[in-house]
Image 1 (cartoon, rainbow, N blue to C red):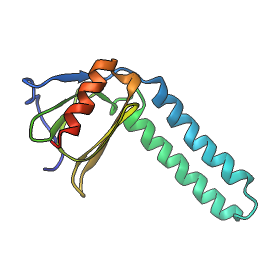
Image 2 (tube, rainbow, N blue to C red; image 1 turned 120 degrees about the vertical axis):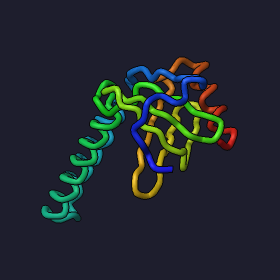
Image 3 (tube, rainbow, N blue to C red; image 1 turned 120 degrees about the horizontal axis):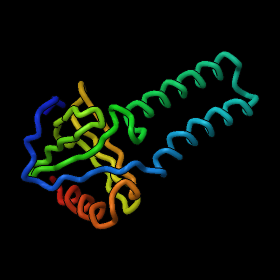
Image 4 (cartoon, helix red, strand yellow; image 1 turned 90 degrees about the horizontal axis):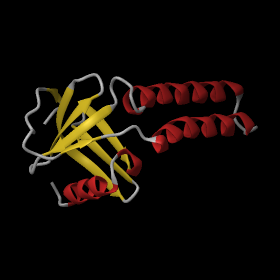
Length: 147
C-alpha cells in the first residue's frame, strides 16, 4: 500500500501523541558533525572527495531536519496503528500520511517504523523520550505482535 494523504480513518485505534525529543535533536546535530570532523581530520581522503562527502552529509542533515526535527512541518506529531499493520501519521503541518508498515525496529529506547513501498517511503523515528514510558511500551508491544 503506497503512502497516501487522507483524513483520519484510524480514530477507533489508540493515538500516540509524539512529544519533542531532546535525544532526537542531539542525534540529528551530533552525527553529521562527527562525520564532518572525521572527514576533515582524515589525511588519506582527497580534498575533492572530502568536499563531496561533506556536501552529501549536509544534504542528509537537511532531509533529517525537514522530516524528523521536533516541531518541523513534516515531523510526525501523532500516529495510530490498526490491526492490519496500517499506520496513520499526523504531521506537524496537519497532513495525514497513511501507509502499510514495511519494516520496523522496536528497542526499549527507540522505535523506527518504515512505511510505504519502494516508490514512496517514510520513516517514523520515536525515541523513548517522545512518549511517556507506558505509551512507548504499548507501541513496542503493538508493533512487535507482527502486524
